[in-house]
Length: 109
Length: 114
Image (cartoon, rainbow over all chains, first blue to last red; front, side, top):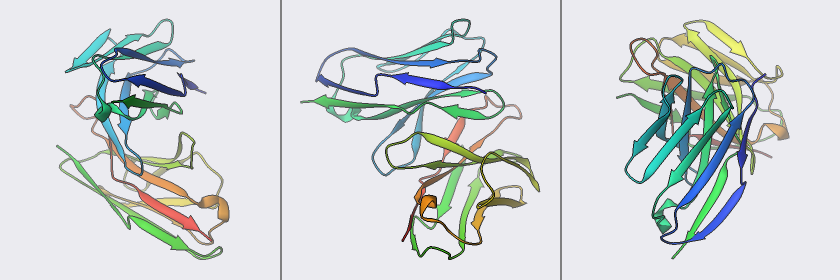
């Protein structure tokens, strides 16, 4: 059974810092990996989707990488802003989507 | 692009009462549909997924059930709620046919069982 782990569980940084969130998974036979953002009390917003054949995806200040063979993905956020404060979740697709517990990010002004 | 509607947005129910949460999808056809639960401070737990009308796969104990009476309608039910059923319930869909398999979520239904 696929297990997804996210490290760290929580992260607090000053505004302007670049940061990296980590996601690891135990079964490398995935179709894709997706990063989401969740604001308190809200649903999940898709940030980036990486297909299994891809190594990375970029959207604005976000860059996600995928190393399927080692079961790892990273989400890089450049020049962080207070508005980036949220919980970030990764999910992997093995015919159903399995989620990590998330990283709660706080960006301090 | 697809839109997912969930209702009710919030619900407070006594222990032992029934439950019905509804999810409808617009903007796509033949989606895979999912119900997730997010308990306070915890990750998302997959409850059910469906690849077509009347096709339901279950990941959880039988206090909850799901049905898919129409292609773009997914319903989560319980006959008798337990305290442990409290949580944030999220409906999601993927559009696989000709698509990327990207998962999209509704805004969620917050259930409190007292």
